[in-house]
Amino acid sequence: LKEFKSKTEAYDDQRNFPALSGTSKFSLFLKNGSLVTSQIIPYLKLEDLSFSQKSGPTQFLKELVWREFYYSILWYRPDVEKTAFLEKYKDIEWSKNKSHFERWCEGTTGFPIVDAGMRELNTTGWMHNRVRMIVASFLVKDLLINWQWGENYFMKMLLDGDLAPNNGGWQWAS
Image (cartoon, rainbow, N blue to C red):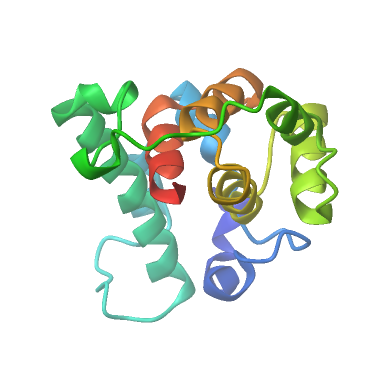
């Protein structure tokens, strides 16, 4: 918390660039329960911010709220663990191309940022959030492979794999 506190002002500008150390990297600590949102908010003095403000601290607070929103969805709609949140997406016919999926998992698709992200995941157990969105989008929108395949792979490989935000992120991407 102390280390990240000095980065909050630049968070809005730097969080989108995987080459920068602009994220909090709190996800592992949030996942294992050694850090909780109710500790983060007062420590970083986020409690009185307005979502209409444009600032690094406000953007970080919004990210925490998204995380809590995904937990809320899972609590009220536990079926999202196995099926699409939105009814209209339940019957999409996905490709079942195992070769494409394996190349995605291995980081050998031929798309440099996708491959770099997947190799980072396979090597370190972590991936920058923006790269997570890119590789997820690539899997479902370019390879047309079911988001659940990617979600399951992430849960197997991510050190910070956490059901609610992982599921929510994959469903959002797809």
